[in-house]
View 1 (cartoon, one colour):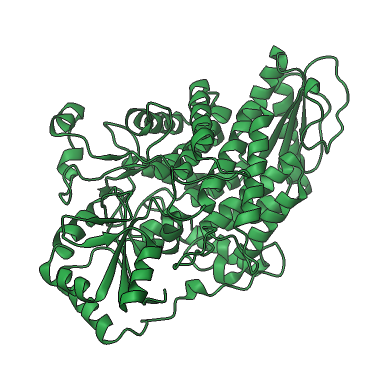
View 2 (cartoon, rainbow, N blue to C red):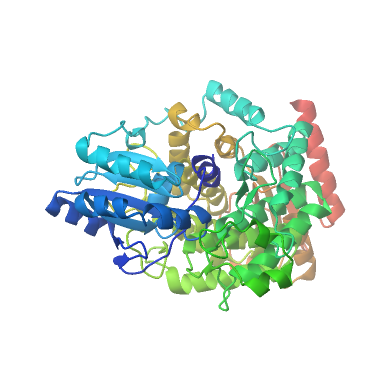
Length: 597
């Protein structure tokens, strides 16, 4: 499953805290928290103590409760002071730790021996007396509770392809985990799972009416998580229905929903899907977009820390503002900005929204100016405690590729290519998969399924655009990791791996306009090709004054005026000059594929 899915499934309760740039701080609970894992483990070794890692998130309710009740308890504080080095880290600030422990939080509590080996892990809020018993039990017997299989690298698949039985099982799980009554997945938390819905949309475009109905049902049900007053999307709902939201609003969630509803609007041509895009953008513009045009990371669920906000979010705009506005975390991370940029550029491509494209480009230029690393990579924050992290460069690489599709500006494609090169040079692991962080600290980074899914899709499509074999190799390496049954079948559903396998082993719909970029007819044809609803497509605009295409794998005949060429998996068109010709060619190609199949 995607990271958001595992986060929702892994955390029954979520936490919030306060971000501190310093390496240590004393909270209101009186605990002298360290903020650096390397310093914490150095102190633990010197003083023969355990390290207690408290992974928090700044945006939600249960951290406030854990701070006040558990870490504010005098007996708990005394036990920590006697035997532990307390380490407190904002998971948004450290994607490597967030990825490693996503199934345990937030809050996630991990206790280590001084050598970095894990002893116990706990998810969610732990009440004071239970927590105290746990701390004392560790002192009495510090042997690990269980071996952590996450540290054991799975054997990669023999080939960059799913075995038939693994594919069949993934497909079955995709269908079996669909909630036919309520929409979404059959889990205790309700949310729009990105990969499940995108896979259903892709299958719907291929003619599967059952998958189309599944996608539409979930898209409609997930609208219950939209804030009717300010717009935007709450993180998820508990109690197995859509009516009990957790009110935090994360930039990552806004980006995921925006992109999926953009794909849905193009695929199904329903006004409610386009309206969903507008409601998310309205929230982003009002609350998360900075004066410089980049995006903040989250907004808290609580108006006052530790107090449930259900009554508050039932109010209208004026009554909410009369009480105050929940805190916005003003950190600007490359990861979340890349996700939002990609979503905005995708909406611009499919929906023709020039304002969305302008916002995407403004944010991308800021991130390039303030977060770029030599060699094509990106920092997470202004300065990073560790890293670099795979997620930041991957998100920006995907954003650049989306901007190239939206603009045909080759500078964006070059930046996407550089990001892929940086990933290959810094995050590949010899055994299999790509790890979340380059640096090797006391808590080792691990390959994460959702990042490898996203990387495989990005690198494969990028290779179709730029023709570079090394980018194709990145995609194949990621799929070898994902195709191992231990990885592919580790979660209740993982349809993103099906998307990977389908895309790597098929050519994208290839669309090319031949004509000058100042030619209105060429621009009209390019716009027509952009509106075609598939995500897995390759759109090139060949202005001969710019030289050959980045991947000149097709020789196009000269034309006297602007023309479009379309290549499917089974045939290519003659030059076409009108929108109707393009649509008729694609319709006949689908019909022929159906007859031949």
